[in-house]
Every structure is written in structure tokens, then in C-alpha cells.
Image (tube, rainbow, N blue to C red; front, side):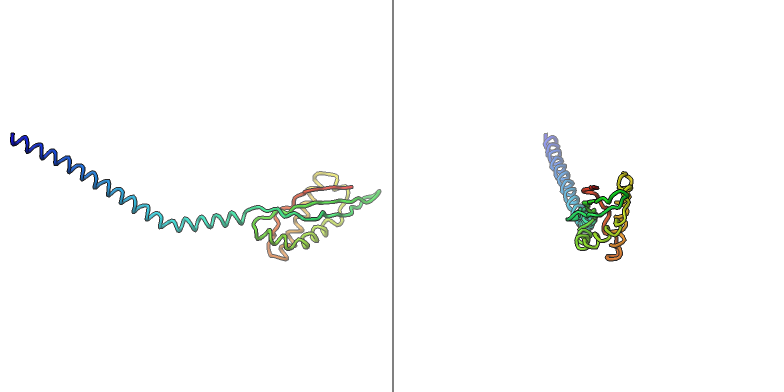
Length: 166
């Protein structure tokens, strides 16, 4: 009977030991996870700087549309009689810095467009390809003028907001 009581106390103590060992392992696991995440958050500075760099890149690539406030009106020569062309244009730029530069140099941009489109042929205005060519010529002219002024093209595209020929 004494042997049975001794076995019960040993087996009961074994359960306590097992409980203590499992608790210690769980505690070590929790401490290990906390240390792992603390070490991982030390790399958070790198991830924060990476996030800031991505935000700056997204801001630099953000598209802005600069509307030319007044329409450009040009006289177009044709054989029976001259025609009048009215263009409403929008400048597509990337980044806030380019938007500010485009707004600042708007008179120079208008001058570049009117210089390029001064001697248009009426036959060119009657075709869809001719309208595309006019836009591309104006775009190249504006980009060349901006490269002279700011050493970069600034304007990515020129878009029509209105195109009227009378």
C-alpha cells in the first residue's frame, strides 16, 4: 500500500513537472517571438525609408494637366479664302515640379506653339492624320523650348481640348 501511495505521488509530481516544462517552453517561445519581432522592427527604418522613396517616386510620376487658359487662334491660308483655326490645348506633365514649371513658362510655351503652327496648310487640317501631325509638331516645339529654358522637356504630351476650323 505504501508503494502505491509512493507511485501516486511520483506520477502526480510528473504531471506537475510536465506542466512546468510545457509552460517554460511556451514562455521561451513567446520571448523568442517578441525578440524576433523587435529585431524585425529594427529593420522597419529601412522599410520606412523604402516607403518614403516609393511615395516620392509616385509623386514624381503623378500626372497633372495644365490647361492653357485662352484658346490659340491662328489664320490658316487656303486658296479660295483664309480660314481661322481655334485650338484649346491641355499640357500633360508628370510631377508637381514640372506642373509649376509649365505654369511659370506658359507664355514661352504659347510662343513655341504659335511659332510652329504659324504656317499651316488648310489641307492638312482636313485629315485626322494631319491633326495628329499638328499636335506632334507642337509637342516637339514645346519640348525643345523647355529644354532651352529648364534643361528638360517638362511637357510630356499636348492634348486637344477643342479644335475648330472655320
